[in-house]
Image 1: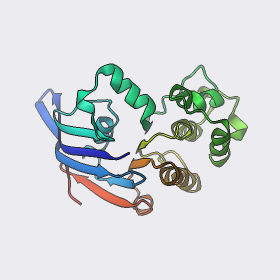
Image 2: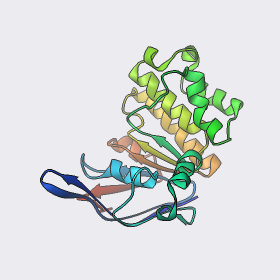
Image 3: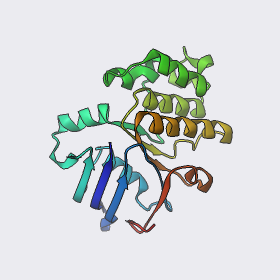
Length: 219
């Protein structure tokens, strides 16, 4: 399923007046394609991910996923879109405190009716989470929580993966393993991957790299 963002504008109100974050962004991510989104802090990368994930509305422009415009969705349809079409890996882990690692990892897959215990076991092993399965989020380090959050996203095999600095809390070896998982899923399941990163080394491993500067895609 492809993601098409056309002429996206987005502003936010501040005490000094409206600040335009995105100024006519055009972005295409094809089925099974992995795209690295780079740019300086404050350039609008996270805002763009939120719009692609249906978490916010653009002021103007269109977001299309698999030929459907998100602007025409009701709030219920947006919730279903986020539940079944999109996997979100943001810097806030958003793990459920009352669930252990096993239950947190399977949570989204069960909601999307895609729970596969064999696939979850593979993710558990490759993310190095086997020693922590019975633990709760408060008993985990930041890096361990990040790995659980990533595993939860990948367990549902979403058609579109949106990842905001997913390896930021991980050491280089674990970060490479996580990126391997995401790229493998994109290839094998036909998922599109849009990943925000400040690492040129990681960005170079994806199919394509785009740069967001001054609220526009410049390359």
